[in-house]
Image (cartoon, rainbow, N blue to C red; front, side, top):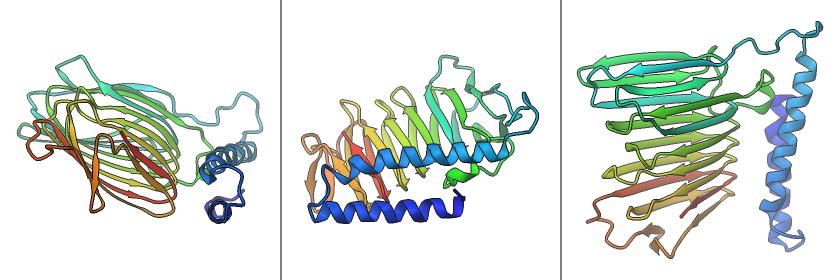
Length: 274
């Protein structure tokens, strides 16, 4: 299947399923049909692309980039901005245990790293090597195989994170990190985020396409949630976050020591906050 036809066909089928669901003609929920359909479609598309691109000689590697281990020393920095541009595959982010490094990790497919230092601040951009695996990457374009990134971040300094992910599975446990700003832009993905537990104030911005994003707000952290969805759904635990005038908010949000403000812009997908 050509990449230029994949999403138009998928969106048409998804729209038909939602229409049937609205008329009560679909057994079960439309979401119960869409996610299996998406996974099967992506898998078939990958298989067909791989078969067309497979080298004639047996044993020839389809993707020459291997896994690399990399890290970056703090060198006195007290704050950092980190941009992660990750394509298809799996991304795992955790708190690290080495107070002398900003990040350490293993990166499949090689790593393109750009570092800029200004006083006690570091700005880092990490992306796959070669670049060009954008956040809205079509499934037909990643015949080379997925990227598996596992990385840990320094829990002792103030962090600003910006993540651009494609057709990926992301597990972001930020609970022990001091993330004050988090921006997520994701395509056809499944993303689990645990927000910081003791970062003071954290601003969160989520832009999701055909994605499932699950956000966990730790106990003791207040939150204010605003969102708009296209054909998707925003599900918020109203036992924790009361709804008023289209906004969900914890009791005592303004005076809370640790709090998070979430802005959510979703498309054909589901975002949940609990």
